[in-house]
Length: 307
Image (tube, rainbow, N blue to C red; front, side, top):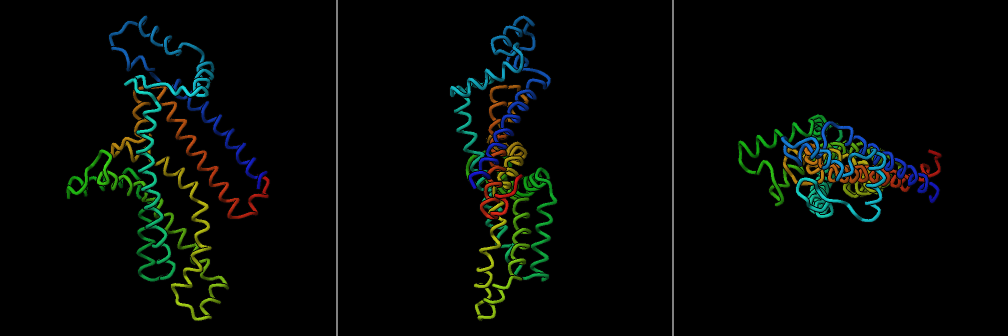
């Protein structure tokens, strides 16, 4: 197990380094720079050059990269070029909002997806099973942005039950969380159904039935093993949520990390954009690392595979 953990951790560190270089260079190669936003459009070129020099943007990119790493190593996260707020303060506020939204969506996907998957397996090839699987197909087939627009039109424009955008009370959280959880709920339902059907056909389940146990107790015994693939995919599910968060937060104007990242990239706020890009990359890579570790815990055969 130690060797397996060391291999996965080393690979994760290499991915993090490569991703940080890619993020840093991609921001600098994109058209425009902070001087185009921070300074007046009528500012002279000499003033723009002085502004770039003050920020160190006139240095080679690789020197800027190592300078930035040095600042991070000393705990200097920098500050926004647009509003002057420390990045640590921005991280606490926007990170908290993203965490609330992500956990709400993850909880919804499990609270709804697991029971529906169990019901579908218990009523295989019956109307309830077909209804649940149809709901799952819709959840996987409808793009997040389209579902968001539909919900806004129905519940905000027509029914006026929920606000279309904003933060941070529960009524503002409902629609973003539902949209973010939609695909995860559908995937969880289908996986739960398949896993339960596999377990129901096992010998130990037939033995419990032969002893005359109630069906709900038999399903409970099968559920223990059926949950293993669901738990092992938690790490990957976190990575998916992080990716979709960018879209959902932008549509619903939810002030999370994804919303701030999009805004900072558009406004060429380099310190904010590169820091929160690295935060999202770190979150996705660590989620993948967590998934690998959970796979190894659930299935010991994986730990001994030389991959």
